[in-house]
Image 1 (tube, rainbow, N blue to C red):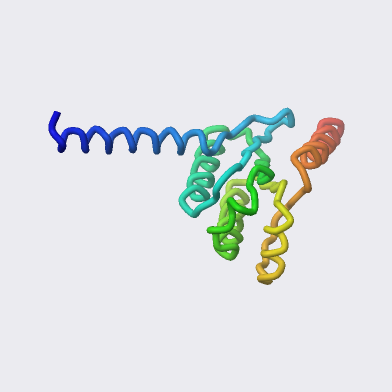
Image 2: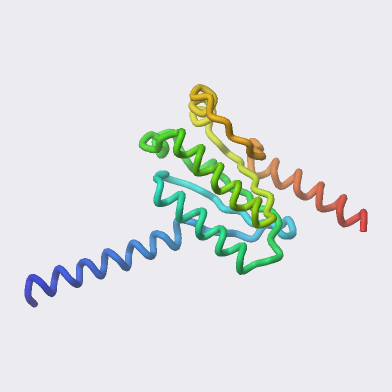
Length: 154
């Protein structure tokens, strides 16, 4: 096999593995709460990955019209995973995601932000208008209580 052929095959392998990583880096899980999905976010955060999270979420919601709420769980993101990410840029990315979802009629909910992230956002005086809960469990309790009220009201 020639060196050029080896390089072509290696590039194809890299592209293949990049597609796999993109696919598994944003799992979207239907919740026990009706019309709600969970998007667990873990590991290293960078601009392209956040853009991928937004794109996959919007595409999923576009295909599943019944979805009304999307819960983004950041509890798997450590301080080290955010160090290279500019906090202003991350706040703008979250705001963009939030706006996109609201335009689609979806209620975005965020859980599990670590204290350092919160400190940095507050310290930088970044305005972020989002619905947050301490944990996924607390968000689910709130959504379940609301769904029982709306089911009982009908």
